[in-house]
Length: 178
Image (cartoon, rainbow, N blue to C red; front, side, top):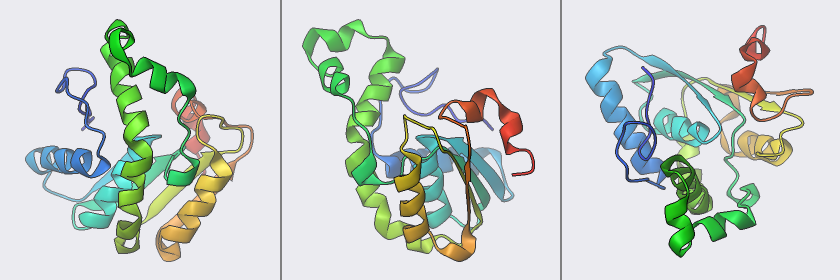
């Protein structure tokens, strides 16, 4: 199944900044559609949601494949324009997709902090990939963070040279033999 997260596409118009709340909503969708274990594959903001699902629902999640992940709350980038977009009339002038993304971005550091104690519960394989030239998600500190908090016996983490944030989506062959 493809998940339409709250605030995007045809789903609820209300953005939900909480990773835990989004994970629980997605779990409900999984429960309605799928009886067996599944593999979740997510990019960017989906990473922490997938880690939450893996930490809380290992009977449903067989494996998590995660690309370009912002999971370190201390290295979460919030751009100056994000605060500007979130004010008064400007907030109304931007399309819903931009507003949803921005609202999540502003809530993200605090939401990531809440996940840290849950990572020790992960008991499913986590395939994690970063690109070494990603300027959206600082790869090195997030990879170090993943190695520190995700149980090492479940973590398969690799850095790919010459890859930036969107390359994982636009060039899916990057996952071949990786």
